[in-house]
Image 1 (cartoon, rainbow, N blue to C red):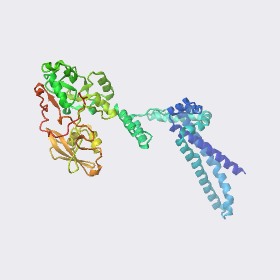
Image 2 (image 1 turned 60 degrees about the vertical axis):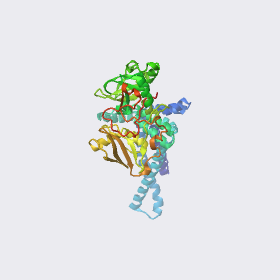
Image 3 (image 1 turned 135 degrees about the vertical axis):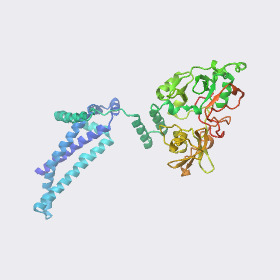
Image 4 (image 1 turned 60 degrees about the horizontal axis):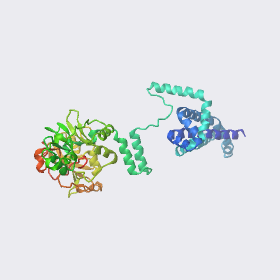
Length: 495
């Protein structure tokens, strides 16, 4: 009879272990906003849970003490009792003496261990993870009472552990931090989208927003080699003609070269000039002072500056004081919402498919643009910003036509040079079927094309001599490019 009472006591101890284990896992799985939301909704049973979360370290210590005590006592009283109960059937089976004692003790230990693991550890663990709030509401009160009773022991144990942590240079925390890093939130958003609990479009928007503050002007600007400027000696008529040819509405006004920026002119101011006077009004009378920003500025403050600046265009300056490129409000906003276009935007074509199944792309495309359009994993790197720069970095020298570079699944070949820059590249896939369906010829995937068939191959510097309507002249070092190449992207808002 005594043995059966001890076995029942062991069952009670296992239930106690289960309570402590469920407390531990449910409290760790919960966050305070979830519990607070339940309380705000009228769930009074969640109030003890919130109190436990505020003293999480103490509650977890109490749970650990409880698990240790119940497990030790269980092993002390249950195993011998089960062994003695097993001696009768084992003796009837023909066992006796030392053999009977050894077998009964071994079986008793196995039974007690399995029962304790399944019902005292695993079951409450899974319950605490699967339904943390419901579980915590059941177990929070008894564990808080146990924490009060065992407080002296918990204080000693916590103090010893915290002392050791401080010796390691770690500051002990009483509760889990509810804050998450952008990387953690991005990972959470991605997993939620994969699980179907978050719409894919919403997930992309949230992920873009989370990474927005980490990017700089250099990441989103249009480099000077892909931008168009106008000389200060040009006229209002030149501005209107240039806007018609390029589809852009704002242009940096330069002196001798791109590093001599005098201002920015908007085509609206040129159009406001009476038609008969446009040949006489110089650009210098229409321009406004430029907004200059370093290429290292983060997008958060840059967005505010562009919104406040009248023309919503900034000149990006590198560390040496030279002009690195231009950035517009549209460039920045597109990093959150994706491509933004209207009927005035001018887009370069996407990759052009050749008859052999390979693709030609401009060397000025960024690695992420190649990944988005072709699926080719061109790696990012601190030493370059374009795919042509990647090829140069891989070769370790100035490329020449015919040079080849390999990346996983693709071979990149230099098709044309523009001075010392890789102007056009061919991407040949090891498996042509791996090219995404979104890639299409001559920008068809974007559904947009140039309205005049012209191409902006690089940095264009327009002066008064260009007022006849002839195509703008490429800057030195950019001549000799094939005029049929896809036009580079410009992000200025169209006229």
